[in-house]
Image (cartoon, rainbow, N blue to C red; front, side, top):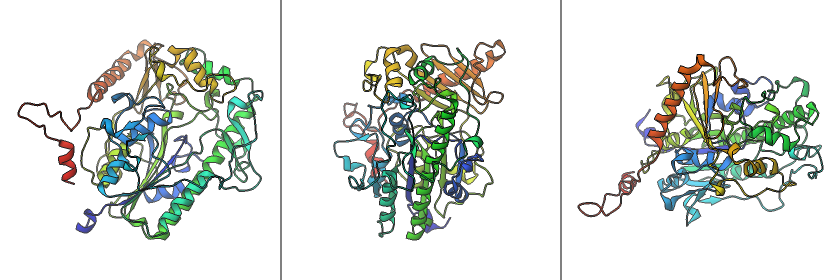
Length: 500
């Protein structure tokens, strides 16, 4: 690495999709799905096949990877609880802007502050009415498909929806001499349900050649939460072909997102900034898409469908990464995004976080990153503010899930999972714990928590949880209270910032 490059700050492009499962990408080993642009990006950089989110719904997951902290550290485990800089929450966008980055974004997600411009330099929103709504056929709760989120084909020809407009906006930014260093932080809605897409994507996948759908677990193997939600959605009453249609359309939505990714990468290369740019592509959580006879997601069920997401990083030209024929299969957490960006952008350390940079692993300097990964969610039965009060009445799209959360509070109880390469242990506060042998039961269908032969494994996994909670249970702000012996306390955060 040359001296000039060692001092250089890379541009950053962060491409975040919503509800994209880790197993649904060509570069992750899926032989059916078509993701040529993500696969090409992986060839230029590094793909991680075992990246796991810290919460399986949008806002808590985004709070985690934008702060480098686990949801439990400050209670960021519900949709309505955001990151607040006035409460000393770390927010990667603010730290980048303070460093001198020009931030282009279409939304900062869970970040809040008295001055929203703390997080961005340019906020892009498509002109109202400028994109196809892409909502699919009109439908209400009288239709048996309503709660399944399946809407099918929205047009017989290619259309431009809001996601396409967001990509267009980022492309225009790239092609108009952007100020450097810049950070493009873009949020794409697809393939989040409802499941709907236009041609040619709707018919792109032969329903008979799709991967097998994971069957519904036997009664008692898992939490009753999914049983209640599945019943309200009416999923078991639907023809089995509907689940194949859901998966085919979900794949079509992913392939359309991949096309947008390809247009963005082409523009970055055309702009002349590509060699100086680090690019991240990942998702905030996964999706059932018919597996387990379920759709959408759950905040307190952590199958790999929901917790494992694709992560691909392309590094700037001065950071050498070895060519690989397959993804890195070391365990990584999505909150490691924070530490990776912090290292690349040379950010001063202003907060305690639990993120580990992926640069050493990507460069081949280390062989192991984490021995285990953690995902958490759910709520206490005496926390009424955590149970999502909206959508409680039949006829609301999210009534099955949100209604069950409120009608059966213990089933939405607090839960945490620790996963190694071989085992997944799920500790539930109000229900039976779960233990899955991932080598012999990768689909997580058989709970072996009560098998006496697994007593040693249970004890080991429980000890991992205890150690993790002890290490990450709280954080001490760098800015100390001035009422200390000897007068005004040192402001460690200010000192770090001044030394950048």
